[in-house]
Amino acid sequence: MKLLVTQARANCLANRRLLAAVARLSNAEFHAPRTSFFPSLALTLNHLLAVDGYYLAALHGDADMVKRWSAYVPATTAAELAVRQDESDRRLIDFCAGLVPADDDRVVAFDRGAGLATGPREPLWRVMAQLFMHQTHHRGQAHAMLAGTAVKPPQLDDFILLGDAAQRVADMAALGWDEPL
Image 1 (cartoon, rainbow, N blue to C red):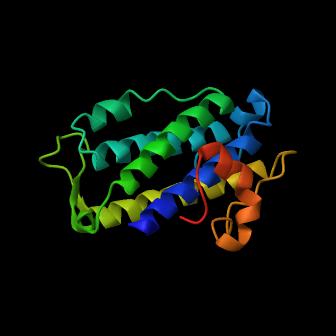
Image 2: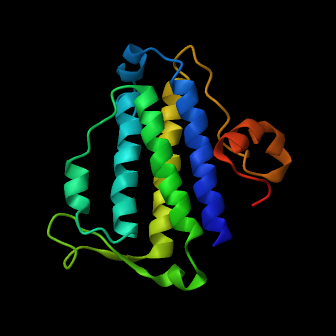
C-alpha cells in the first residue's frame, strides 16, 4: 500500500504548491472567467475539493455521501480553499496509510442519488486510480489557467522522486514528513 500513500502524499504536495501560487492572485483573479471545463480557477479547484469529499465519503462507507455532496459550500477565497483542501488531502493520506493488501479488492459502494443499495460498486484499487487521475486532470487545468496570469505556475511533476527531495524540504517539514517513505 506504499504506492497509494506515496500517491496521496504527492497529491497533497501538488495541491499545496498549486494553491500557494493561486493564493498570490487577487480574489477577483481567482474568480475571473478563464478558458477551461470549469471556467475559473475558483470553480475548478472547488470542484476538486467537492469530488474529493464525495470519494472520501464513499471510501469510508459514509451513507450520507449524496447529502454531503449537495451541502458542499464552495470556498470563496484561495486561502480558505487551501485550508480545506489540505484537510481533505490529510484525510486521504490517513485513509491510504490504514490500508492493508487485502483491501485492494474491497468493494466501494457509491450513492448516485438512489441509495447505496442501488449505486455502483467498484473495487477500491479502481476508485483510488480514478480519484488520483481526477485530481491530476483538473489540477492540470488549473495549472494552465494560472499560466494566463502574472503568477508563474509551480512545477507539479517529477517532484516526488528522491532526486528532487531538496525541492520539497520546506513542504516536508511543514507536513511533518520524513524522506524516504
